[in-house]
Length: 78
Length: 218
Image (cartoon, rainbow over all chains, first blue to last red; front, top):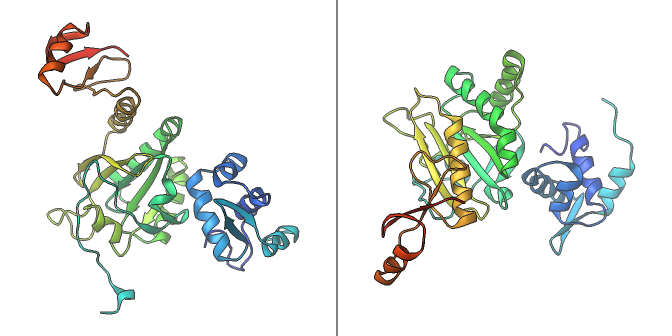
């Protein structure tokens, strides 16, 4: 999954997308906020949801508690 | 048969004016579905093989028109019957050797599922490689145009851009475009479908050669 690296940590792009979702917004807004194409946002949202880090409600995505915790944790240095 | 090891989908051929065949595939940008592109135009195109010369010129050329396509609300997605590792190595090689970054995803269609769905394989050319196919899919997911080129012949990016402009002009203005049309040139008003409409057309004030042949400027 491109949202997660080989050690199971979120990639920088995934963190950016999840952070944009934290308020519960439509994916088109996430695309505008991140500057990433909407197809990538849709794909990432699916993967983040599969990883339990995001959830969909009423056509908006938002970070789960696990997602918020993952965002709060500092990214692991390479 | 173990369904998890099914290698080939039933060969099919997509039809213009109908929904493009749905797919989910591994790509260099992660797992993508056709539905992920809904709301944008999409150019789904295939090439025979990574690390081959004509295909490399085409990838460079597609990358060069990508900004113009983005301005038109068009995304690109490539495909070949190669692995994701091969795709990654090849696009890194293109960047290193040709100085061109490939911005679009490339489907790794090793099991030929998408290639089969879209009729990309021409056994007279190759049973294991996709030919050079282009599928233009509109924001509603409808297949609007197809181009099929042989393994030997690189595609023309200006024609692909022209095709996009023509389709978008048709959608915006309800007109058709004549042979060799380029943006800014006169467009064709669809022919009247009834005798009454044909009579009206002669009086409508368009540039009309005959009841079925009218042009106008946009």
